[in-house]
Figure 1 (cartoon, rainbow, N blue to C red):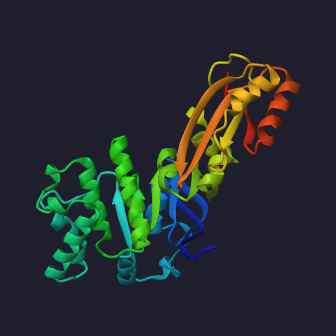
Figure 2: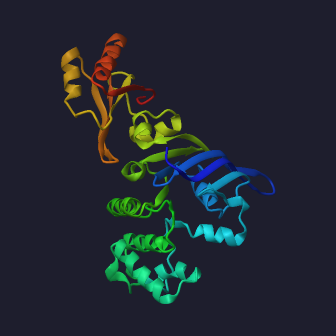
Figure 3: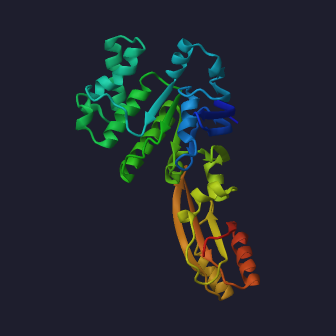
Length: 337
């Protein structure tokens, strides 16, 4: 185990109105280690954004504690909290750039607030724009930049105060898929090159699979499951995790039978023609409902959902056949209607 940079203990957040109470977060416990790219995934309204705002105390938790780099943030004075926040860069879905400032001056802004002299700030801002691949756009205003370029300026600005962690709240949700991939590649590079811990809040499993090493699934204001991305991808334990991991997250019309098997290629298995061999072995058809492959942390992972014959004994033998080849095979309930 590494050293925890962010430790969240028994954290709850309740919003009160005249008529009612809304429990945005309920008894959250999380440990994010130094150097992690840690994903927090959940549907809209699950409490993800509230959680990230509690991490830097923009929202005060109703109960519980947030430790950052060993310090209990709730015990800090306002001045100490402002100082601690300089070690926490934040990146938003809508970029939040100052429209009247050039890219360079946007990156300088947090350094001005921190009281860094102008020349030092300009030099640092130019270095950071180079790091994010925008050395040639120093003088451009946000209105002259694409969505991906704006997010790169926002990342450079978030790095300006040498943070220990970058908190990314749906940072790629407003971007198209290819721009999303380039921003995620940049974040991964920053994590490797600078050793900065990254926390990614998202509702997209593809973002988690692309760059995160660990993930927490948040469902109805609680943590449903947490662990290594590859473990949760291979064997999701809860319905909330299965909703994100299982293909299409839903049902399809029945063709052969209602019995389905999900086969997981775990990064070590080779893509031998396992289904073709299975059909030849048992001389019975299976129906491939879904198949895909992914790159998780540099290893090939894949999954397949197949419908099996109605015959119970034959289906059991097929499960045994797949498992004997070192693959994960599990029954998927309610995948077909």
